[in-house]
Amino acid sequence: MDRIKIWPHMTIVAVVIALIAGLGVAFWMKHEQTASAAELPYAARIQRVDGQVAFSNSVPNNDANPEWIAATPNQPFSVGDRIYTRDNARTSLAFSGRNFARLNPNTSLDVVALQDRRTQLALRDGSAIFDLGYLQPNELFEVATPNGAIDFVQPGLYNVGFNNNGGVLVSVLSGLARVVGLGGSGQINKGEMLTLLGQTATRLALSRLNGQNAGYLVDDYYRYQYPNLYDGRYSNYDAYLNDPYYYDPYRRNVSYQYVSSIIPGINDLDYYGDWQNVAGYGYAWRPRVDAGWVPYQQGYWTNDYPYGPTWVSTEPWGYAPYHCGRWVNVNNQWLWIPDAVNTTPAYAPALVAFVPLNDANQIGWVPLGPGDPYAPRYYDNNWQPQYLTRANVVPAQLINYGIPGAVTVVPVDAWGRAIDPRSVRRIDQQRLASVRPTLDPLTLTPLRNAVVQSAWGRGKIDLPPGKYKVAVDASGFGKYEQDNVSVNLGKTSN
Picture 1 (cartoon, one colour):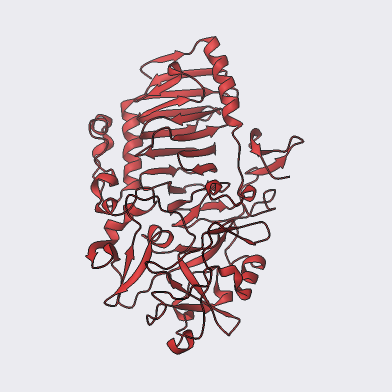
Picture 2 (spheres, one colour; picture 1 turned 180 degrees about the vertical axis):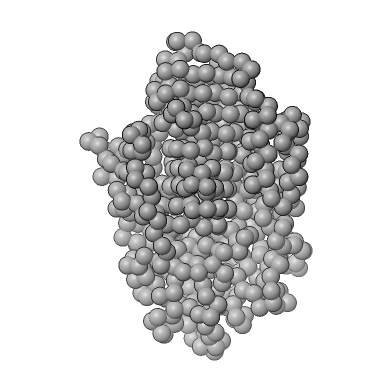
């Protein structure tokens, strides 16, 4: 290290107090939501998975024994969800179209808050790089650890992780960070590393980053994040500092001209499709797909509490076009029509209408088109819908309903597994004309039974002993116990 300084004793006392307050931030679990739309959390995207990555969703009454499943690309995650990478595994996350993170092997991360101007995460083990391309005025992006909580004050590239002695290292490769609650003297500037030594932060060491090590971190991250573009230029840390925005997708990708940068996943659209001006719709995105392709057929359904049945695409670009905007068929080609770039799009688990068929073992769905209504909602502990608008859940007409092949039909018991093209059934248009679709899938008895009673066909993952054992103490505050370290996170349900 080029320079090391230990902060004065009274400053350390202030830091410890601030860190305790920071770690006591309310851990608002999903099952505590109400009917207020303002309280519904945002959803983020698991954009890449390499190796064994486990994911746990906060299903009601299951927090003491969370079910871990294999994470997949394009899987949404939100408040109360947990992600864990095993040996030799990595995963990248997209919180928006400009803010990302990559979890390294043996890393565990909890999502504490995910709202407008507020992102709070809890890093329990391992290390992660946080790549922030944009922060709104007064936006909070915070990472808590057992040793302290760190705020990222400016857009930049940050590495946070644990060393072999239980200390937490915070490296500011670019940008500006600070320890929660501490003034200017506690900030960590570009090119500096802060070490929080011990679980009570009794010593804090600030040092200059080693240029060679910093170059390795930046180079390794960009090779992973932009494998189709990166040319290795950032192996020299000074080259990165001189031009840190060279690979910024916001500056390179045309998709950001047509889609709000709030939406995760738009950085993939340029590589997998093309934009064109369509009469009556404006600019629309056309994926490069085979003839006969239909939206919402390559992927699987999962039950994401509290949003209900949620579509997870197996297509590499398949996040933004399935959770925002609408689909339209023009000249036998499907095009995605995004919301206006200057709007704040709302997340939807799937923008489809569900088609009940006389055969109780079959269910269908059709992509919603421009102008089609949608009923935003979430579900309570008993899987009863809480609607956020007065939209009619049984629409009178849908743009895509009469298009041959637009309705995908599968056996209900095939849900939860990747859609097998051989299981997709063609339904005669005359038969469809006698059926009224619904926007709320849990109004359909066969589907509702599958949601409430079924495990949705996804394989469980057993974590190593000691990972994420949850307890509730007498005060009603949840506590994660990991590797003999306890950290209070906030109030759980009683």
